[in-house]
Image 1 (cartoon, rainbow, N blue to C red):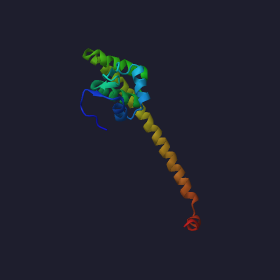
Image 2: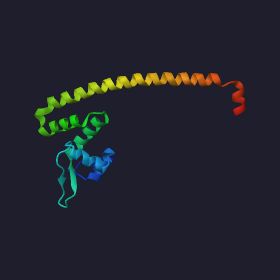
Image 3: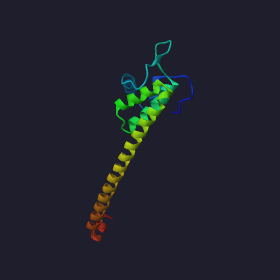
Length: 137
C-alpha cells in the first residue's frame, strides 16, 4: 500500500504500510523510536508524515539487525534537527560497514552450503542405479 502524501496517518495505515502489527508500532513508540504520537480531536492516535518517513528508515535499519538502543539514538538525532546530520551519517556508515561484513559472512556460508548440496546430490546420483530407475518408472 502506497501512502498518499498528507499530514496525518492512522495507526492501521502505518502498520499496513510497513507490515507491522499495531503492538509493534506501539512498542516502537514506547521504545523512543518515534516521538510522542499526536491525537486527533476524537482522541485517536495519528502519525505525522515525518514520523512515517522516519519509521521507514527505522524498519530498514531494524530489518538489517541494528539494535534498538542504536535505533533510539539515531531517531533522537533525527528529532534534534539538521545540525546532527554528521552524527547521523556516522551511525549509518558504521551500520553499512557492519552490514557489508555480515553479507560477506553470509555469502561464505552460502558457498559452504552449496558445496554440501552438490556433494549430497552426487552421492544420491551414484546410488541410483539403472535398475532403481526402471523400478520406479
